[in-house]
Image (cartoon, rainbow, N blue to C red; front, top):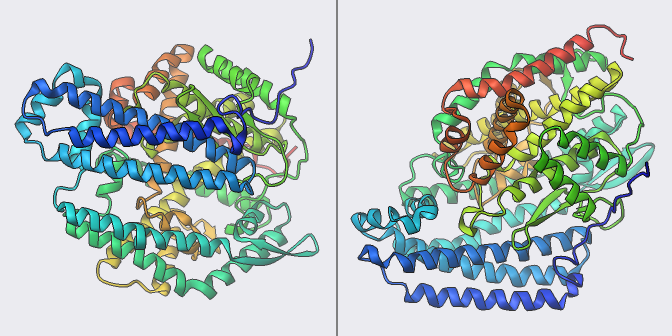
Length: 602
């Protein structure tokens, strides 16, 4: 049988011919601009409905919004791909600026629509949204109305919008610029190298412990030197956010992120409660891995160390065949989808210069396709990265038939399909593993993900929660921020991490994202949520694929609680649901401990 050869460079010309100099794309942007100005005129002609028979106008307006969102998504995805495949593409950067201006104009007009909807009298509103014509849009319309700030006048809304653009978001941009311009000197394999922060952080996975430790210490010195500046940035971001909350009547800093993630506080608390109960299996894993490395406890700079120094390489074509085979065991649609992705060159995997370092999946809703970006270096971790991004692409595939306004799902659901796909491959790889060493490599990768979600992300959540409480009373000093971070890490890791970076409040970019606070718990939610779904899939076998697709399809038009109740019949405000996903992770730890019970690792 002839061996398949798969293209490592993606096909973007099928989307828009000609790359960053595409005449076709420029024509598309012009049509998009006209579409947005047509929307502005449509918005101005839209009168507040006073009768239910005016529902037709509202339907047209909502469908117009959906159409523009889909078109913007198509444009943004194309530009993101251009900039990723060549970070020096100045023409693509120019295109990004043009589309960003159009998007900003559209969002301002959309805000006006939402304010108009929020001001409709309650009895008229109820009669409108209950009509059959608005059935598909009922959830999103109620969400817009509920989440639109009624405490602020139009003048105050505009002022806050301007302040965000000129001041608040500028602090976030300043942080990114500052981090990007910091260089770190580290000895790597006998040679002193001047590295970016990202490059230095990546050395935590270097096979040589001396390099890992030196990189860790060099970064800590940099953070100590610049802590006062970063503390000012963080305090200004939090201070502005708290002032807006006070003016808007927001009582808890968690109120907005919970709304954005469409989940109840009871759900989040149930999840954290289960995680807090099951710290020991992951502490045991960390202690055992440290013991294997010759230490009494896990040092922070050794956490990402490779379990073995195996140099076994996986060819890209082999990875493609492996992933297709494993996905076929789950269901026919997933198998068909992944074959299309590989055969039609949806994946950019070539290892070459001037590519972005960040893997991603970009959806193209107008053409019903996705593009996956990564650099494939032949490792098992590369295979997992590819699987993860293909999971995101399958989520896009599931949403193909969904209307434009219901395509956006919250961050808490965003990692579901990607983590689910990883679990398919992890399980299949474990079944095929021939040696104890192969099994341990797989288990180590799985357990690293559990530790990151159950311990690292938990520490971020605890830190941010406590920081905001103290920030209400005034500026929080850099020393106090470091102390809060240290306490949060100790609690979240159950004391099982030695020499942690208590300056992680400086170098963790999520704290400085001005679009949303608490950019942490949704990661853990998505991870454990996907594992809960995977546990269900193992019970039902291949027939589960239909339920899974329906769940993904509805992910943009309902709450997390209603989504799971509808498709799985489970109540995620109860700890029992989260226990099912946790059980999988606990078994991983038990298996790791069993396989490493002696020094005889094959």
